Length: 133
Image (cartoon, helix red, strand yellow):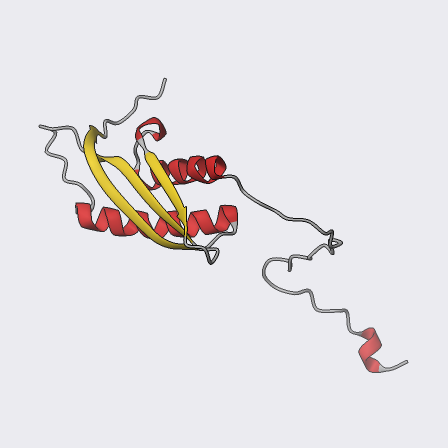
């Protein structure tokens, strides 16, 4: 018996590596419908912009090479007037941050590359703190 046989195995540190499950390949196509893409973009944009999803509009176009262009029309969330609350970031920074978030989340959820995100703030909504009951 070698001396190495007496040494217990070293446990790996950190999270356990994920194990990929082998999935058999089956012929066919996987498609995500336009309505599903639009609704996903609306939900992701509402979350990124902190606005109600019912007030966010989205338009999706395909560039013909598999990438998407997303156009978002949303209200701008502003603090309660007279509260002397200063927004955390400027409108420009809000739009830049939201564009990156929308592109990344759409890619993660749908698997489709988002090449361009355009955000238009068409109105404003008061970002009033909500009461917890």
